[in-house]
Length: 90
Image (cartoon, rainbow, N blue to C red; front, side, top):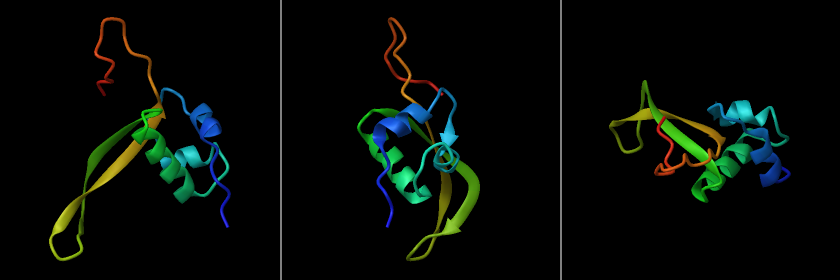
Protein backbone atom coordinates (compact mmCIF):
# COMPACT_ATOMS: atom_id res chain seq x y z
CA UNK A 1 0.00 0.00 0.00
CA UNK A 2 1.29 3.42 -0.96
CA UNK A 3 1.06 6.44 1.29
CA UNK A 4 -0.48 9.52 -0.37
CA UNK A 5 1.91 12.25 -1.48
CA UNK A 6 1.52 15.48 0.51
CA UNK A 7 0.75 18.30 -1.97
CA UNK A 8 2.40 21.05 0.07
CA UNK A 9 5.57 19.03 0.56
CA UNK A 10 5.64 18.20 -3.14
CA UNK A 11 5.27 21.87 -4.14
CA UNK A 12 7.96 22.84 -1.61
CA UNK A 13 10.36 20.34 -3.23
CA UNK A 14 10.07 22.09 -6.61
CA UNK A 15 12.23 24.99 -7.72
CA UNK A 16 12.69 27.03 -10.92
CA UNK A 17 14.30 24.13 -12.79
CA UNK A 18 12.25 21.89 -15.08
CA UNK A 19 12.42 18.34 -13.66
CA UNK A 20 10.89 14.99 -14.52
CA UNK A 21 8.58 13.23 -12.09
CA UNK A 22 11.29 10.63 -11.48
CA UNK A 23 13.85 13.23 -10.38
CA UNK A 24 11.27 14.93 -8.14
CA UNK A 25 10.46 11.55 -6.57
CA UNK A 26 13.91 11.51 -4.97
CA UNK A 27 13.11 14.76 -3.15
CA UNK A 28 9.86 13.55 -1.56
CA UNK A 29 8.67 10.25 -0.14
CA UNK A 30 6.33 8.25 -2.32
CA UNK A 31 6.29 5.91 -5.26
CA UNK A 32 7.10 7.23 -8.72
CA UNK A 33 3.53 6.58 -9.88
CA UNK A 34 2.01 8.45 -6.94
CA UNK A 35 4.37 11.42 -7.36
CA UNK A 36 3.67 11.60 -11.11
CA UNK A 37 -0.09 11.42 -10.57
CA UNK A 38 0.07 14.15 -7.91
CA UNK A 39 2.16 16.40 -10.19
CA UNK A 40 -0.28 15.99 -13.09
CA UNK A 41 -3.18 16.74 -10.73
CA UNK A 42 -1.44 19.84 -9.33
CA UNK A 43 -0.63 21.04 -12.85
CA UNK A 44 -4.28 20.60 -13.80
CA UNK A 45 -5.32 22.86 -10.93
CA UNK A 46 -2.67 25.47 -11.81
CA UNK A 47 -0.51 25.00 -8.71
CA UNK A 48 2.62 23.86 -10.64
CA UNK A 49 3.77 24.31 -14.23
CA UNK A 50 3.86 21.36 -16.63
CA UNK A 51 5.65 21.18 -19.97
CA UNK A 52 5.21 18.22 -22.34
CA UNK A 53 7.73 17.88 -25.15
CA UNK A 54 7.89 15.26 -27.90
CA UNK A 55 11.02 13.12 -28.03
CA UNK A 56 12.60 11.63 -31.14
CA UNK A 57 11.25 8.21 -30.20
CA UNK A 58 8.07 6.52 -31.31
CA UNK A 59 6.22 3.44 -30.12
CA UNK A 60 3.49 1.23 -31.44
CA UNK A 61 0.03 2.35 -30.43
CA UNK A 62 -2.81 0.04 -29.50
CA UNK A 63 -4.88 -0.76 -32.54
CA UNK A 64 -1.96 -0.28 -34.92
CA UNK A 65 0.02 2.74 -35.99
CA UNK A 66 2.66 4.59 -34.03
CA UNK A 67 2.72 7.51 -31.65
CA UNK A 68 5.42 9.95 -30.59
CA UNK A 69 6.81 9.51 -27.09
CA UNK A 70 6.64 12.59 -24.90
CA UNK A 71 8.52 13.77 -21.83
CA UNK A 72 6.67 15.69 -19.13
CA UNK A 73 8.60 18.06 -16.87
CA UNK A 74 7.40 20.13 -13.94
CA UNK A 75 8.53 23.17 -11.96
CA UNK A 76 7.25 25.55 -9.30
CA UNK A 77 4.64 28.02 -10.54
CA UNK A 78 6.42 31.16 -11.69
CA UNK A 79 5.04 34.57 -10.72
CA UNK A 80 3.55 36.57 -13.57
CA UNK A 81 5.80 39.26 -14.99
CA UNK A 82 4.58 42.83 -14.45
CA UNK A 83 2.54 43.87 -17.47
CA UNK A 84 2.82 40.36 -18.93
CA UNK A 85 0.24 37.78 -19.80
CA UNK A 86 1.15 35.49 -16.91
CA UNK A 87 2.09 32.72 -19.31
CA UNK A 88 5.53 31.13 -19.08
CA UNK A 89 7.32 31.07 -22.43
CA UNK A 90 9.67 28.11 -22.32
